[in-house]
Picture 1 (spheres, rainbow, N blue to C red):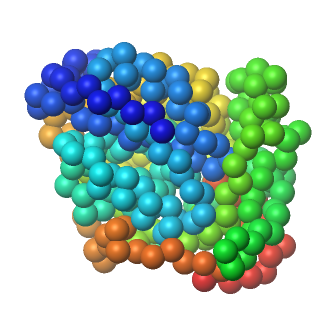
Picture 2 (cartoon, rainbow, N blue to C red; picture 1 turned 135 degrees about the vertical axis):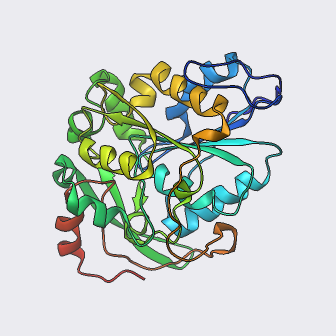
Picture 3 (cartoon, one colour; picture 1 turned 120 degrees about the vertical axis):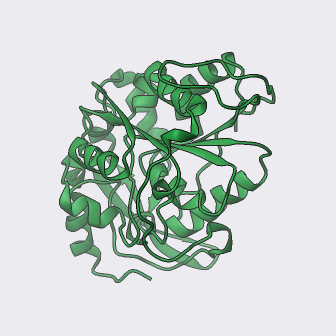
Length: 302
């Protein structure tokens, strides 16, 4: 977890307007198969601009469990917050921000952005990718809980996940990857915070993990301020300056950036949600493998 405690007047970024005298804390939430170090290049740039930054460890155990954990991290922060999510982390920030008035902006980096009642599986079915042949499923047990983890196949990680990084780097990523429980993609969103909080979206045009058309669909539906770059799925690693620039826009934007979208679904506070356990129907980060893997498991969601 990276933390800088400096609080000062914000520096204006291109496309943004300063509205407060205190800089927000930037919270960076990583996605599946990764850890918080994937944000290192962005953290360094934000801290040089004087921002407090926190990059918590995402448990990767399921949407309800993980969003509750991220919500607890947000509760520990005083002052305004800009909440940033990559990949599966986008699902988490959409839930974790609910009921927290300090979250001023949401930033999605080649991310999942489900609406109420959606999950990674349902979005993957509409927007297939190459990810379906790039994962292995491995049963796990921990503390009396049984489930299934997904891993990226080491020989496919470079092509599907991080094609614009050196192969020497992706070999290390394959060895050190953190698996994600299938419940991360089978559990349905109970809230969509982007309907009430201004959002920014970075579309990775060379993404083979989440379909770029899915990213465009999500961003358009949310009325997000959107940029597109030639990047693989891991834009925060291969293009940290572009990601930093978008975060700075969100951090300095005026309140007029707030979208005017109708509320959907019932009110949900991630702080009150307890983690669900058990084996769920399998899915992937956002690729076509959601359907393939679900046939292999044939197990209902909890």
